[in-house]
Amino acid sequence: MSRVVSVPVRRATLSGSPLEAVHQSIIACDRCPRLRKYCQQIGREKRRAYRDDTYWARPVPGFGDPKARVLIVGLAPAAHGANRTGRVFTGDGAGGSGDFLMSALNRAGFANLTTSHRPDDGLTLRDAFILAAVRCAPPANKPTPEEIANCLPHFDAELDALPNVRVVVALGKIGFDAYLNLLRHRGQVVRPKPAFGHGVAHVLPNGHTLVGCYHPSRQNTHTGKLTPTMMDSVFEKVREVLRVR
Image (cartoon, rainbow, N blue to C red; front, side):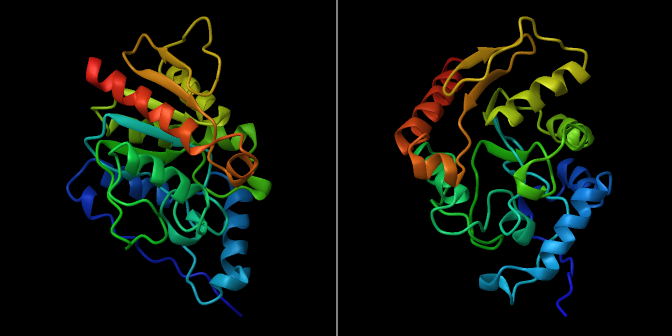
C-alpha cells in the first residue's frame, strides 16, 4: 500500500526571512480535520499519472518574492497539484491553472518561466507573492466558511511578513472576500463593501489596491470566461498602480 511521506520543499528565497517561521507554522497546521483527512487520503490513493510521486499532502504555504509589492490570492491547493507538489499553483498539468497564471505573470514581468510543474523547476517570482485563502485541498474544491476562517490567521501572518505589498490581486470571489475578512479581523472595516468584478480595482483605506480577477481554473479558461487577454489586462492595471505609487 502507498503511504504518504512528507518531505521538505526547497524555498531558498526565504532563507533568513520572517516568512520561514510563518511557513513552518502553516505546514504544521491541523485546524481542519476534514481537510487534513482528505489531503492524506488523496496522497495515499494518488492519480494514476502520479503513482510514483511522493505527495506533499500537508498545508501549503505561499511562494514568491519576500519583497513583493504584488500579492496574489488564490482559492486552495489542487488535490493533485499543490497538494502533491507542496507549492501553490504547481503541478496541475499542462494547460492547468498554474501554467495559465505563470504565463500571464511572465508576460507582465513578474515570473521568469511560463510554466509551474515542480518545486525544483527553477521558477522565480519577481515583485510578486502567491498564497491561497485555504491551505489544504478541499473536497470538490469547496471549503466551508469555517475552514476559510480557520486559515485567516495564516493569511494574516504571511501578509505581516510581506511589508512591501501595495496591490492585492484576488483570483476569484473567495480570495477577494478572504482579504476583506482579514481587514475586518484587523479592525479595518471597508464601507461600502467593495464588489468583486474582473479587472475592477478598489483603493482601500489601508493603502492597498484590491483588484478582482476571475480564477484561472480550467472551467473558466476552457470555456472562455477567462482569456489570456483578460488576464493580461489585470496585470497591466497592476503595473499602472505600481508606477503611480
